[in-house]
Length: 197
Image (cartoon, rainbow, N blue to C red; front, top):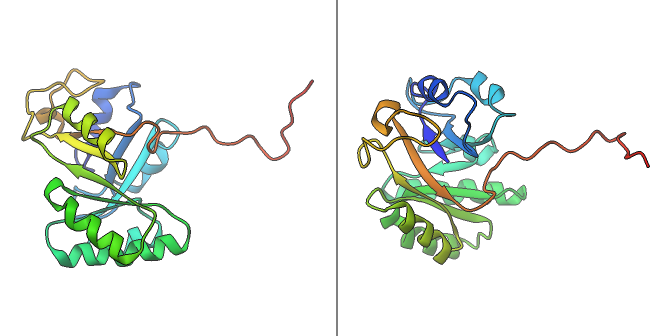
């Protein structure tokens, strides 16, 4: 999964050409240049899986289902808001994904367990990890669906997969994700479709 801001998305798309990753992650909220312009969500929907982050303190778009993940900054207040939003989502039968730095994982697991939530999974950031360490962490922690292991600051000269540009040039993050996580699935056939024998 490649994550990027709205302002960096056009450069990433130009560098990728038709070489899309399994999943692109972006923001539905944020200051100017962070959130993706709305048309990209529609334009890219048939090209790859899309993962939408809400990073507002109240996480209202996440709670409403208009975002898939809650980007939780440090501090217990925002984690508490994520729990409230995830309770709303769980009442609808929706899965919830919390993103934060790895050092928050223990507190988040405790808070999720104490709240009784059953459909919360985690995406953690650890920019000192290697890809192999990130893959091993996911394998050892089934509640962790993704590890953001590379960023423009931690790996500025690394070439972004699918491009000839560096992480710093594109301003993107790389995540190892569980197989199938948010990957594009073909739409079901029309309801009047039948196989001919």
